[in-house]
Amino acid sequence: MTSPPPLDRDLAPPAADLGRRRFFRAFAGELIQTAATVAGAAQALQRASSEAASAILDPQGAAERLDPGLATGTGATTGPAGFRTAFREGDGVLHLIDQRRLPDALVEYPCSSAGEVAFAIREMIVRGAPAIGAAAAIGLALSAEKIRSARPYARRATLRGGANALINARPTAVNLRWAVERLMARYTEIGELSEDGEAIAAAMRAEADSIVMEATTDHGRLANFGLEVLPTPEDRPVRVLTHCNTGPLACGQFGTALGVVQAAHFAERPIHVWVDETRPYLQGARLTTWELAQAGVPHTLIPDVAAGHLMARGEVDVILVGADRVAANGDTANKVGTYTLAVLAARHGIPFFVCAPTSSVDLATADGSAIVIEERKPEEVLEIRGVRIAPPGTQVRNPAFDVTPAELISGIITEEGVIRAPFEPGLRDATEGARARWAAARGSGTAHTASGSN
Ligand code: MRU
Image (cartoon, rainbow, N blue to C red; front, side, top):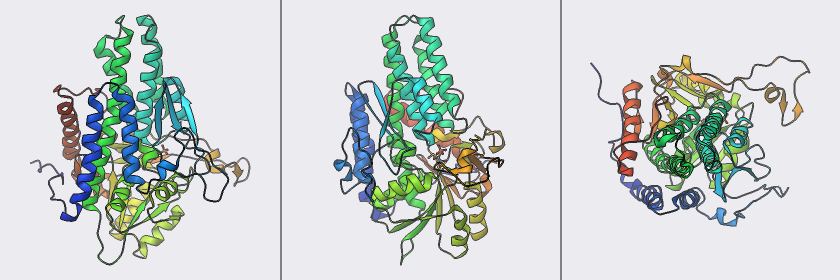
């Protein structure tokens, strides 16, 4: 017999959280949805979502101190400052924060087609599962706009080529395929061989905007649900351990695991974060520390290998990580090192939560054994920021992700609620719930979703 849907979404929120909930609802729901109803919603939406994110993640107004066009590292000891989401758009150009340059410099990298965005994704200029999905969608929309006067067959070849380049740029994060398939499904639906390139471009643009808008609301909802399971020690801050980078840079909007952390900080819940440095690419050391510093969240950087020591000493209350792909049974691919943390958490009885929007859920993949794990270049292991640390000729294996089996996961925090084992019915419900919610918001009764992914 099937057990009831394992979603915690009906849990009553603690009274103290009502103010924060109202705040979230104000900006993540109403504000964004209002923006989406006006003409020219695309630009307004991205401005609004970026500003709304700044309001919560940067309450002291650090964002206002940032030159909106460009801010570069000064070489000063403090480094560049100012909260930014992973991308912004202006004048037909997608400006990505060049994440390779952080924390030393905050500079942008311009892209104006699917091919250019695919390059930026491959090179890790933009990275993080939800962020690469959103960037890919915008890249494809930009290509459709550029070729709106092209002949239908030429347009189809260009769009299909761009979509393939994007999907193949990085294989593990399912959000990438999910976003590209959504746009291509829209393209097919509108009539791919139609002469009306304007209508095709407009439809693909609207779909890309929907992806960005939905992420804004959904990541805010996810953070809310995360707060409900965050431990609340009476006499000290809750000590969260996190891995890799799951903040606005990785997600385009508030972030997933780091969204929960930052929402807790905003709600004035005492919190301290252990940040894994995340060898070899150092997303934790370079990006998570930078984002937490911008948001004013107390944190301490640790070598990945110190995590077990801290757990054994009782210095970790909960582990929050993101996800690049959640299989139907709950097995989760995330940045390499996550599995090790989950095993250690089980050994020490520490709750281990995966924070994943349903865009990271891949119901077409039965379990983690079918998830393709990206293997990256040896230099990332042989060198640290250009300085060689191993003898020349040393053989290297560099898997970028690992799979944490569902049995080691305490819960999966989604925008529809916290899912507990057995995960599959909850993941299916959550995915359907998110689709239905957005279909209702669009008033169409049908969500535009691609068939392949979730
Ligand atoms: O290789 P990256 O930096 O693109 O890895 C993705 C990640 O940031 C993490 O695995 C993360 O936990 C999932 S994305 C919120």
